[in-house]
Length: 383
Image 1 (cartoon, one colour):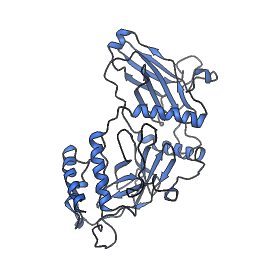
Image 2 (tube, rainbow, N blue to C red):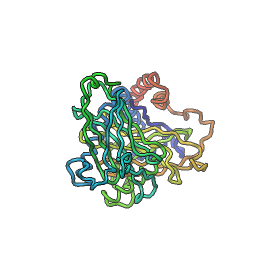
Image 3 (cartoon, rainbow, N blue to C red):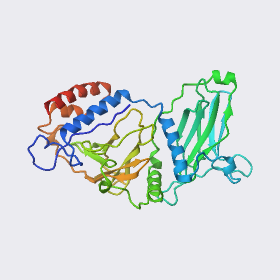
Image 4 (cartoon, one colour):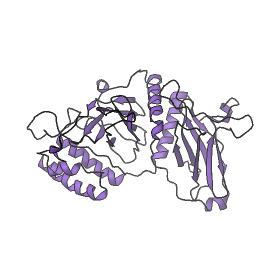
C-alpha cells in the first residue's frame, strides 16, 4: 500500500492569502496542487500491489550489467577466475526450505563474499541483493542484505507451490550480477511447496544506510561523472522537495514539481526513484525507504523528525536525497526545523477542513483515507 502524504504547514511570513498556512519548499506548489497530489496518493493507496517489484529489480540488474559491465548476461562460476566468492549457491532441504549463500566458504580452500560497510565510496563493498527465479522466469524470493554484518551473505525462504526449479542470483555493488546453478525439484517436492511467493518491496536495514549513501556517491562519480549530487540547477523533475507539518515532528517528500514535471514511476522500462532518504544538518541519515514503482504515479514518502539524531544532537534542519536508477543522485533544498508555538494547535488558523483532513492520510489507516478523500474532493471544488 501507499501510505505517503503531502502535509500542510505554516509559513514563516505574515501573508494573508489563501496559502498563508503552507510552508512548501518548492516555490511553485500551491494548495490546489497539494490536494491534487493527495488525491493521487489516495488512488495509489488502493491500487498498489507489490508482486512485480522483484521482477522490476531483476530487470534493473540486467540493465546495469550491460550498462556498467558490458555484459548481456550475468557472470557465472566460469567468470570467477577460480575464486567463487561472488557465485550464489542454492540448496533445498526435505521441508522445501531453500537457502542461498554467496561464495563457497564451506568448502576447503573456498571463500565467502565479504561484507564491507563503509561511509567511504572507495571502500564500501557488499552483496546488496540475493534473488531466486523459478522455471517461468518469475522472481519468487528476494532479500536486501545488511552490509554491516559479521556473517556471510545468505537468504532462506520457503519454496512456493508449483515451483519445479529455482535459479539463484546475486548482485555485488562493485562486481555486478551473478548466477548460480539451477536446482530442479522433484515433482513431489514441487507439489508440497510452502506459502505462495511473496516478493514485495522492503527497505535496507538502518545499519546499511551510510553504506548505501556511499555507494550512490561512488556511482554518481563513476557512472554520471559528478563528484556531488545533482540539484535544482539540473532540473526539477528529479529533485526531492520536503514539506513539514506545523509541529515539525514529521514531513513528506515528493520528487518533482507538481505544477511542472513529476518524476515517473515506471516499473516496465524500468525508470523510477528507487530510494528516498532524509539527512539532518550533520549529514546523519534520519530515514530511508525503497520504493516500488508498481501502479504508482509519483514518488512520495512520509517521515518522522526526531528531536535528536543518533549522536544526541538537536535536529535543526533536514534535506532529502533521491536516487533515480537512470539519472543518478539528486538532493533537495535544505529545510529549517524551527520550534512552533503550541498555541497554533494541530491546524493553523485559516486552514480548511479539507486541508486538515489531508494531514491524516496514511496516519490512521483505511478509515482516515476514506474521510480524507471526501474532504479533498470538496477542497478541489472550492478552489
